[in-house]
Every structure is written in structure tokens, then in C-alpha cells.
Length: 117
Length: 113
Image (cartoon, rainbow over all chains, first blue to last red; front, side, top):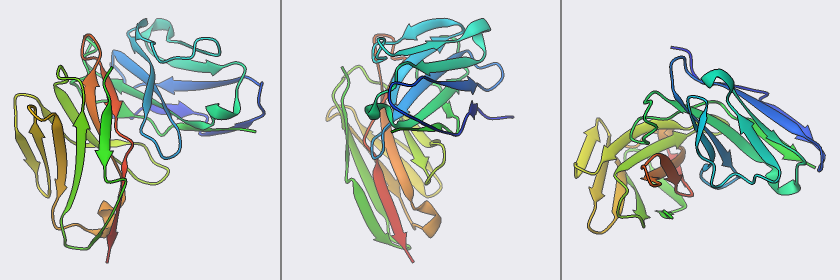
């Protein structure tokens, strides 16, 4: 089966600019996650969708980050305006269980590496 | 909220030796504990997971043990090979519905040949 797709793979922007990332989960997966992975750290959950509804966005910096999952399939994550500390890899993951419980395997995409100058 | 600590941060072993990575967690409600392997510049990939109703699980050269009383779990890799070199992350389920994962900081494993 095809894996989780993300684009772009790399992005370099200047601080205060805007940027958007796109994720296409594995077909049929109801749950989609966005993680931020800062160099040398483990992934940190930003937001979790179940179908097109938000399950958990407690760690999303809502003053600058936003995410949506229209039609319960693809998702976009936006940063506006970007700060230097947003430099990280943004990982998208999906899992098949519609209840959203973390017990099911999360499949990760290749990530988008963001550098904010 | 859940906090996951992982040790050591780096681990070097000789090819053929065993490697052990340990994690502790804080939320006694956590009941799912996956381990991910991430090679340089690549996506994290699940290598093994364990649920709270099991104390040990093994898959070929990889095993995971869980001590719920002490709130720690460990990854054991036997007969290490150079291709085992990567960053390994542990994680624990968290949240009111157990619907999110909290990751450790990672362990860089180097297998010297």
C-alpha cells in the first residue's frame, strides 16, 4: 500500500513569512496527526484529527499555527508568521482506527524539513 | 501530562553485542508503548510495540519488556548489526482517551563493525 505522502520535503523561509505543508494519509486511515520534531528531540504532537474533526490540539501554538483536514482526507498545516524556533521537521502520520485511540500503529510520512532564517 | 524519559542518549556497541535502551513514563494510565527506529533523514518506523496486558514481547532479535509497577519499559536488541545504527524513540500513550503518543528524546545507537 502507498505510504503517507508529504510535500514539500524542504522549505527555507525568512522569519515572519508564511508557510504551508501538505499531507496525504494512507487511504482509508481515519486518524491523522501532525508532529513537530526539533533536531535532537522526539516528535511532539501538534494536532490530531479524526476524520475531519479535531481530537487534540492542546500543544498547537494557535496564535501562529493552524491546520485543517477538509473532507477527512488530506490535511494542511500552516505557520503564519514563522519564527526562528519553528525550524524543525514537520511529520505527518496516520492510523486506521476510527476511534482515534493511540493503540493502533501510526505510520509516518517522510516529513517536511523547515528552516527559518 | 505524560512525561517520557529515555536513556541513554547515545549508545555505542560492537557488532554482535546486545544493546538495551530504557524508558520511564509518568502517567499510570498509559497502556500502549511503541518503539520507533529513525534512520538519518528518514521517517520514524515502528519496530515493536507492547500493550499493558503483556510483560514481554519478542520479534526475532528485538524484544521489549514492560514493568507497569515501576513505570518503565526497555528495548533489547541482540546480535547487533551495522544496519541497526539509527535513532530509536520510545513512546507512551497519553491523553484522556489514550489517543496520543508522547515520545522520548531518542537514543542514537552506533554499531561498530
